[in-house]
Length: 537
Image (cartoon, rainbow, N blue to C red; front, top):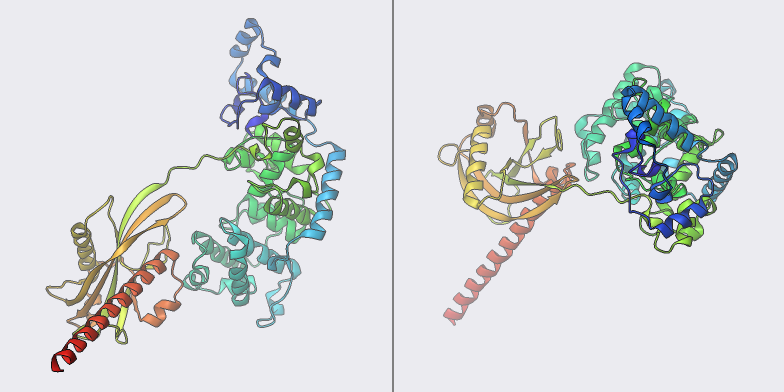
């Protein structure tokens, strides 16, 4: 919410770190001031430097002489004066009525918005889950799944999840491996672990599902947004919910050009009461309380919060807003400004976030197939198993299964990759071609780029088929890598495991490589057969 003041105004010290979308022209400033005859607060696009009353030198020196606390208090008081009545009573009632009426007639039919009980696994009375708690559980699961994931993708995952674990008590009895398998493909697996830990904590507490924000925030993985969603939608607590969609809608309603993904901006859209008590009373929280709290409908807080999110998701979109269909276009300051100045676009609000540069990393992955045969028969996997390794319990993709892999630090040739992998396999599993196994096939399969939110990972894939000289259990029980958790699974089990998209990509590459190799071998065999027949004739 960088547009609270001009960047050159002195006094409002807490606002100096905010971004501005673009400097307005003098013509734009005059037009914007015409729209905002009596602005509720000043934005970067509604203020021209020439209209700023500069204090005298004596006043500036006096301000410098004041203690820091007094200067901050003075700046806060000045900011409060500028942002009084962010929404007038008339605007509040109009926005509430318009959004709720639009939502009632246009909301999408999404499974988490229906309060139903799974017929296949009925809720037991002793579990003590009423309608509100069942809805709270459904809202919780859906909101966690929807983080960084599209609605259409989430629907199928949500339905499968609720069919398997229809209540909090069912989820609390699940294992982490089961949860990860169900979550496979959604990414950000830490979310799934927090869901499980939170369910276990709530059930163990014995007090039922927390019903207010302050209690919900004590549950692992539940932050301001999720707590507000559960409390308002399931239990009708009058609190706001602020996600990217809501920030975009509010930023356009008030023509605020702040970066929507900046942590400070997000905090500004939250009430002061949602923050820990020890946080200082700063300008951003005063703005938050005035902007977000005024709008929440006291009779239908959950529906109103969902209407704001729905508006941002369906009409007030980042790139192609449908202003002609918007129920609150009449109250939209950004739209009014854009009509007066064609150089100003609705999509200028809020400012576009700056994408962080991704970190480049490199990994070598070896698909180790352990064959029960002494020789290699193309296409025969009936007596083979695959070695899987469990990742550490902390960090990226924590606790998930993958093929043996090593980080390389930089681009690496095949020779170095194999050297690093050989060291890992020998240390962790005593797989040594000279002593414990014989290599039936070792081929470089290829490479691909796997994108995480902050990492660009280049993955080198290799296939290694070995035959063990000793019994598998004897060999692996003597391994040196005691901290490495592993298991061997056959092809059928591997196909049904909840593997990450990156691991599945590796396995798919290996399977295609085998098929191509088999096709090539078959073609060569047919060619030899035809040559022999030709020679006989």
